[in-house]
Image (cartoon, rainbow, N blue to C red; front, side, top):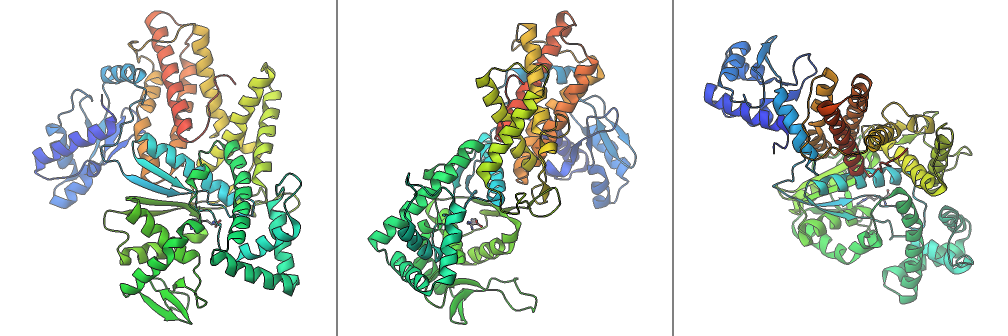
Length: 577
Ligand code: ARG
């Protein structure tokens, strides 16, 4: 089966360019784009550039391509518009046949990659003995969606949680734990409170501060009792994180933990290697690498500190060791880091230094999948009403509460208690995730319950409703359209929906190519919108015979696309809403 007709058309155009103009172009250079011009499904924009390249009129070039194009099985006779756009209209018979094929394909046309990569992705990565904040929420949601998308494409994806579980704060945290002990049920109910109290004592009480410093030394020298206490802190924090992951439906488990402490044993070798390769220089007593191209405002080169003047290692050394470990020990081809934009320069410096050190070769890809901030409705940093930082667990529980309210407000609300709980969870958590994923990740976005739970607009709720409606139609029809169902595309709205449905593979590819889940969101929204138009204009249950079967098939296919698309974003699509 044709995986993606856009790619197929591109390949055919490239062949036509070769045979008519004797030019080699790649499929991408065929510049095939879905078209919104009336009467064209796709358009080829290559003639303008090619014309320039060979010094011929673009229209003439377009004509030559069209004459040589062998795509009569897919498209009608193409026409040429304006300076040399080639308009391509899919044959109705091909499109209808393809709908029938898709109905029987559980991958809905999405191909499996023939060049699988081994992708190590760093996401979530909260800090031990601190609550996760909204930055970690974004990282968790975006990272999880990318894991799902890339796995679905057939890549090997290794998630790793780069917990902040090492370093000087642990001295004070352990001493504070010794002073206060765990709570009655051996827990720390308020991680942030715990951290802040420790910090307060550290600042106010010189004796405590000295103990804390001693404790860091003990931790680093591997003192057993100290390590045990450290371990308890890590585990207790992990319990908090797991609650959040569970509520969010994020697959990270303790097995995915590769915290800063994990790289400890590799740090000395990492630094030695940098020294041996002549990449280091001592500056102000610290051993540094100065990757080319990074300077401060005064134009002075910026250092990556690989060994502090006191001999200790920090965040930068650890991230260098991370690159070395994942490419060297684990054979990763791609390294992705879902971390907020403020750390951009850090990662660019790490990548540059890693290339210099040979840990990243020409075939490796290292990408900082950066993201902006979540803002409150006042446009400032997202905070609680009291001005404190928002506890994720509270936020997620509120999401479910808000969703329950939405469900309760419905007149036809007839869920039993269990179903209501599951559906409210799907709607509430889905809303939070989708609000994040549907925005270009590099931009900030405003967190608004009202907006994210709206039943129309580009929201999870809208998509979930659309899917539930499709499934409800199928339930009412009493029988699901079988695999071989003949699809008839008589009405413009039917055809428009079909054109939308065949673009699912391209949408997934686009979301993966730029690590931009919002492209899949936009696609799903457009699909639900095309469905809504179809539903308004083409009676389904009231139609008869082959038309009825065909329209039921369109409902089934749309529901499958929405359900799979949402699930690749980590969002559930309840059967009833
Ligand atoms: N723990 C860090 C933070 O909360 C994020 C770590 C990101 N990953 C990395 N390899 N540096 O800011």
